[in-house]
Image (tube, rainbow, N blue to C red):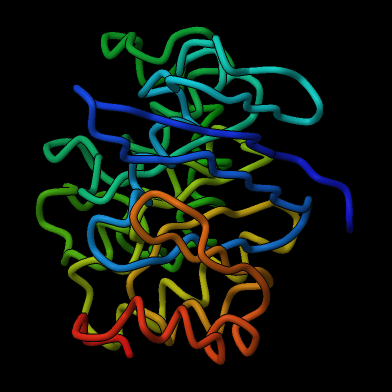
Length: 250
C-alpha cells in the first residue's frame, strides 16, 4: 500500500515569466485516493496538465511506476494506464450510452473510431459495455442518447468510458463540478467503488467530498505545496486556513 505509483520531483511550469507551478513534489501511493486542493489560481489544474502531459514542464521529473514519463506524449502516457477525465463532460452527445462505452472498449480491437463497423462484429462488446454501464448506475439507460442524460448521469457515463480503457490510475479533474447534492452523493459513491482496485488522483473544490473520500490531501497555493496529509491534518493547519480565507472554504 505504501508503494508510490506516480511521483513528481521539482515540477515547475512558467508561462511568459509567470511561475504557475513552482518546485512541486508529489507522491501518490498505489491503491489510494489522493486529492489535490487549493484556492482558485493555486495551480491545481496546471499540475494535472503536467502530470498527464498536456503541458510540458519547465523543470522537474515525472515518474509512473518508477519510469520517467516527463518527455512522453499524452497518448503514450494513457497507454501506460493513466486515464484522465476533464472538468467538462466529454462524451459523444448524439450516440447512445452503450455506443459511448463501446467506442472506448473498441480500443482493444484497434477499431476505436471505426464507426462503420457492423453491429454484428461489435456485438461481442455489448456484454462488457452493459457491465460497465450497470457498474456506474446507468442500467436502463443503455439506449438513451448521451445528450438526453441529466448532467450527473453524463458524469457517470464519462467514468464508465474511462473505466472501459481499464486504467490502473484514474485522474479526475473536478468530478463534482456542476452537480447537485444527490448527484454528488452518487458520484462520490462511484469513485469510492472504482477506487477499490485502482489509484485515484483528483482535483476537487468540494471539501466535504475530499474529507469523505481522500486518504491523502495535497494543498497547493500560489503554485507551491503548502501542506500534505490526511484531512484532519491539513484542515487543522493554520497556513491552510489562512490560504482559504475569503474563498468560502475556510
